[in-house]
Length: 77
Image (cartoon, rainbow, N blue to C red; front, side):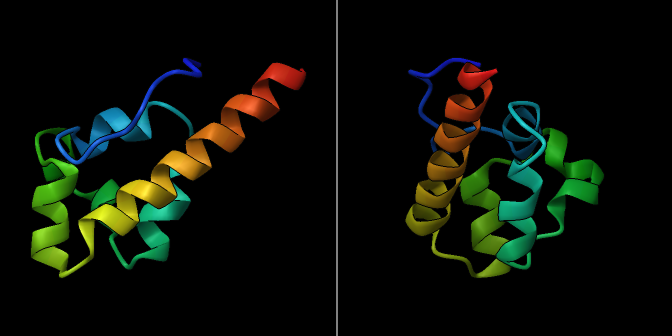
C-alpha cells in the first residue's frame, strides 16, 4: 500500500477497489453498488457520483480516510 497515494475523482471505481477491499464498503455506504457493475472498470468516481446524485468531494474524502486507515493497519502487521 502506498501511504502517499491520494484518491481523486478522476480515478476509476475499479482502480480504487483494487487498493483495498474496505473501499467497497464506502461505495455501498453511499448507495453506490457500482462495485458489482461492469461499468466500474471505466467509470470514474466523478461520473458515478453524477449518476447516483452523490457529493463527489464528500465521497472522495471518505475514500481517502478509509484508505489511510487501511494503510496504517497494514503497517502494523
